[in-house]
Length: 338
Image (cartoon, rainbow, N blue to C red; front, side, top):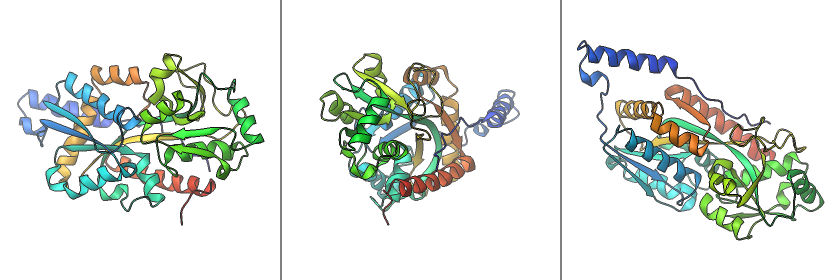
């Protein structure tokens, strides 16, 4: 099974409709409420993982863009960690009546962890507002690595699957562990023999790599741009079908002799269960407005994020297929719990 990397979803018709409504409001043909049926003056961004990881970076980038574009008066970020994100999900569900302004940042992680039965909830137990980005996984090593490139690292693993200690910002069976397992599986190495150290978020995982607790991180490479650009770590290869424009010198794993080792980590926004459809629509509209601003483009370009915006039925359809693809991948790598 080949996991498809999502491509950016067009929303031209939606944007055209919003511009039409805006012009009618300006002309006095429609009341101002037609442009924003649900007023949003405050947004609370909830992250179930530690500071510095990918979901945290997404939340803080969204916070920056909302504030700079003056679309929302008050934007806050809360990190409620524990249980691989389950603490934040449970909090959102248990306090749903008080969470009318809360957006939880999650995505691929919630799908993988529910498939692995790490917690009882699935993405269907909360309210999907839309997807935002799809981040490409990469292989990162520190400057003390004895492996010159991805081919050398793969050769070492073929000789001994325990020759390289892998790390990731997710628990065993989580998305980072799954990504590493897919690399080994596609290279012809049994992933069951892999050493994997789990960290609570990408920030702690990076500290583990820099401290030589692990020799290789498999994580969305955009989470490590600061360290990559500062020459603290080396990005060896991408789990993608083509090179990325932000790191054009970095080969794909296919170029390193490991075909079909592709994977992306989708980041999405969720609300509490039971939120009124008009409120969900208003937040989806807000997301669509903010990603059209120069403030968001500044954040996106700085972080090299791969845009993948969907909303409504398109987002629901994507997540249903995403779940099917990830279940098949877990089965392929021997990590699906039954």
